[in-house]
Length: 135
Figure 1: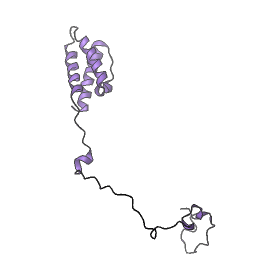
Figure 2: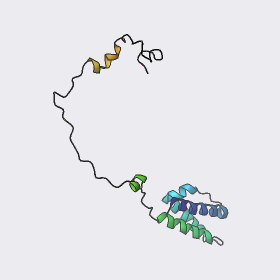
Figure 3: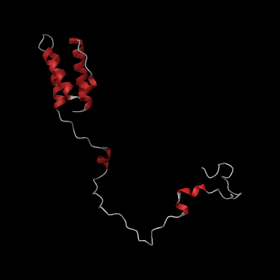
Figure 4: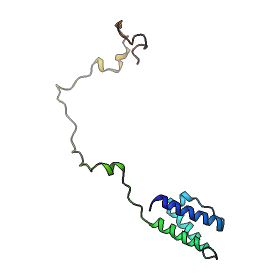
């Protein structure tokens, strides 16, 4: 059963209980919380024994059936569109040869920015718009 259908049943039972018994319920919580719904159904059936309350028993039964119905499994948009993929093969970390590995030097140092900037090329278009090397 759709959540909107459970909400509609809960709203109808809420209106009946409010008009006939003065009981106020939380409609949205009633539609999603099975424990709260069971307690309200118990209360509604207890009150339905009084004369003129047959419709309260009917809607309490509908709510109970709606809450017992198993929710349909949710299908995501990606699951509906894309076919299932096989998992990627597990690979170990790549081992670099010593000749391929670069050794850190001054250029990779965090302190390389502490050197004063060199003279700029006068043709540089950004020379007047930015302070230092910040962009």
